[in-house]
Length: 392
Image (cartoon, rainbow, N blue to C red; front, top):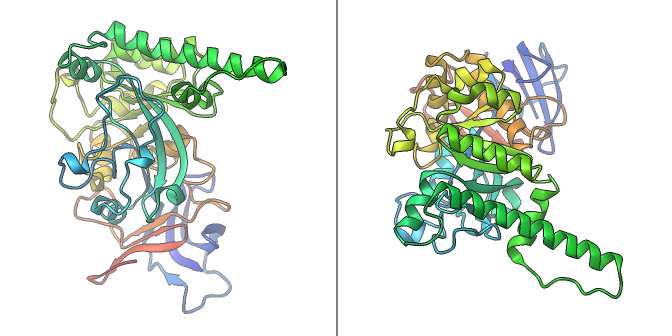
């Protein structure tokens, strides 16, 4: 399949291609270029001058694990009975048939990181998934490990009169869990090197943390306040973790530190109230200040805090706060993919990448403008042109 006669903002070294075309085979982009392709068939798509972008990426959500119409039966986000639960896997709680996946697709969002909540010091294993499919395993392209610092674990376990009820205890609990996993790995290594030694008893929590300690998985630290951001940096350096700050509401206060330590930030939500004390310094200028300081920035809705279809509106707010339009687009495409570690598959339009793309007849930052074509893995998942809407 070919899509031609498009203005292609590739978010890659190819730059912006005027009057370009793209070729798709077996769900992948195989060619990209300028002008009309040599051969065009009836199955190919004339974009009629539309803007083509990579599919948007929401770098932090709870999509599918908090279902549409929040109630107990549809909320599987927080296991608030144990403050350290790395062995939980969010894919076991995600409903990929939840209506909000369709809303994501209609908003041009083709990939998300969906996550356990922030009630626990460690909430569990996250999942980077495409927004089309019926079985989460088949939609998943990556993962991460969720930690939380600050107000959320404190408030949850203070109400239960259990540890952790202070920031000190939350950090100590994370350190203890990581140290136990290090010891568990040492015991495994020792047993494998000596046939007379027995393997340690299986420890599900430590086992789940081993890919993190091997730097095959990134740690995602929920932090709002600047001091919590610094605690995340401290812990990550102690255990040599590849890590990301989620939210980073006061990141602009320590932008120099984040830049010096090469710490990426997934900023957001921004279109919301200051619903708790640690968000009292929320500003839409945060992404711009971080970017200008040299920090890698992605944007998120934290769905359902902000409904996922408003990711592009979040990017527009970042522009209002001082980001350039191209940098804001980058933060919900290639930049988000880089931070999540899936930039070899999504976030850019280039040969070899997944054919996740969208076409706009207007401004993608306009609240009244939706993409008229969205593809995931080369398959149209939302198409609404000339007032006809099809969902496949």
